[in-house]
Image (tube, rainbow, N blue to C red; front, side, top):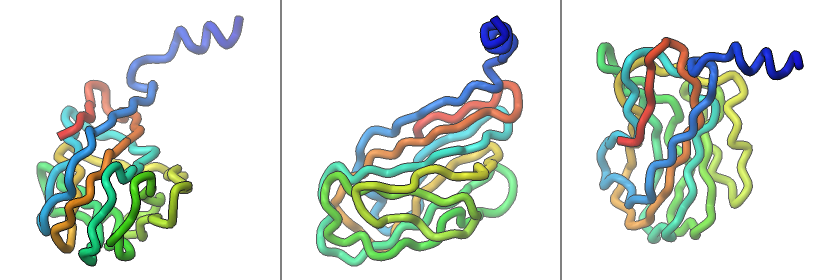
Length: 154
């Protein structure tokens, strides 16, 4: 009975969301929006990429960028190790420290952002160091901090 009462009191503001961005070829040596945030602050608890089409042999690194509507860009996850020739099923994830490195180690990944990362309105972008023909599906788990905040695939 206590659990039911607790769940009944929860608001949509407290419920986590999951957004999946359909698989797509990586941006070609440019910064491109993956997700759009509107209406206020959100807390990201998981950020995972799954390679769906193998990467070609081009040396390529990834940087995840917070691109706020107001203010300067911030590198959330710094350039990864080389993702050249990564095969379908490879997983990429982001740790919980701003400016930390990507986890690109294999088909299993830590995935969880322990403390969460808070983003303001704007976009969450991916910057690549080269053109690579591989494709990645991006999955993000998030919780609104401000009432009315939203996060959608760009």
